[in-house]
Image 1 (cartoon, rainbow, N blue to C red):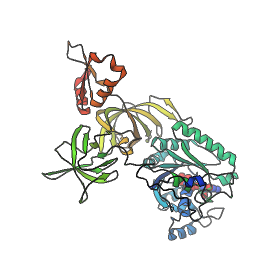
Image 2 (cartoon, helix red, strand yellow):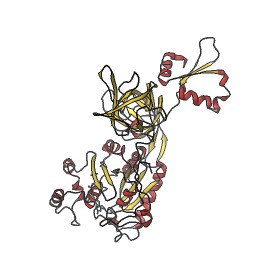
Image 3 (tube, rainbow, N blue to C red):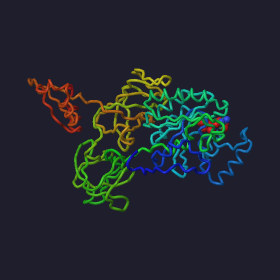
Length: 505
Ligand SMILES: Nc1nc2c(ncn2[C@@H]2O[C@H](COP(=O)(O)OP(=O)(O)OP(=O)(O)O)[C@@H](O)[C@H]2O)c(=O)[nH]1
């Protein structure tokens, strides 16, 4: 648990209608920060019904909505229950077309915690919305219809959620009422998903048998119908989950705007996307690597003595430095990766797919850079294995790729920072967003080895300083050390050097 969370050890007080699932859970320290979640799964698995149920049973539904629901759903289902999916109001189009068409955010809370849920559509062509919802979520509720088990679309959504950094999953085995509350079927689906989750590196999986329609094991207990199930209800699992902290890690300010209202004032505006800062702290401007100290932090009309992730600020530095929109101001300790070559994973979102070797625009925060993509493997959704793959990544494919930039780029690994680790790709011809991606690592820019001037025997390595340090320290290089000169450059200098070095590289 993060230091910012409020830890309590109060026993679970049985709030109205909620039955604690186990005494042991009562002793777990709780994270009381709001939890962001997404629901995903295939069409008709019951997502809308489940969210409707959550809102209804946690009393998030206002009286006027309740009246409308009772009127609209009148004879709509055989059990004589209201159609909870209709609670997802505002989605008139869904009711007309029979599909959910965008990401809708809902808010609900219990005595212990508040929740923000993104309802993302199940149709394959809306994977893009799923990516949007997943990028901010702490936990994914994955629905599976108990009658059909895990479908390819369910696996695809689980994979995207895992790629987007979600590490907590609830597998909601829904419509269990339609298979006579069969324990064996539930256990089979749960085991199959756990195995799939392991391949994705996800270990925190809570499988819950439920009937969203009847409200069993959602907020209210389902013990009467499923005495064999001893785990948590959905709401109990959600109350126990952890929110991710954006304040951990180094300070990051992607610069959205440079303001110069007068000669004496120059400020850099943006929203802090990681860490914290205070006046006097040393910062570096990337990709140039210029160092300065923070003189002032200004918000709207106040001068502040600190700023943390999520704050929109104007930063004033103690000296004139060259900062442009798209640069990132970072803490000196724990800097992001700077380089021209990165590994990433991406989800292709356009019918045309992603073409190897084609130049795209990559957009991350306020930065937009030219990039070429080289796919290296593609995920086989039926097995969870990566298959070597060197050609086009077609629509909805999930692939591992190399990114090559013409200018130095700055990223965190997505695991470390979702804002500075994520990007979208834009097709320069159509201006469509063709992929969403996450950076996983920097690739060594070892393209920087070249011969010195003619006649010189020694190898000159002109490398960004961090890489030069690593190389000097490595075993691999130890025996060759006196054959080479190492020049430590800033990443920008190194890139410039090599773009001028031409065919020597
Ligand atoms: N018997 C039973 N029916 C359910 C349950 N949950 C949902 N349903 C029914 O299944 C159908 C589909 O439910 P929805 O909530 O609309 O499914 P969805 O996944 O949101 O579908 P899309 O919005 O099209 O992606 C509806 O007729 C629901 O009443 C359940 O637990 N038991």
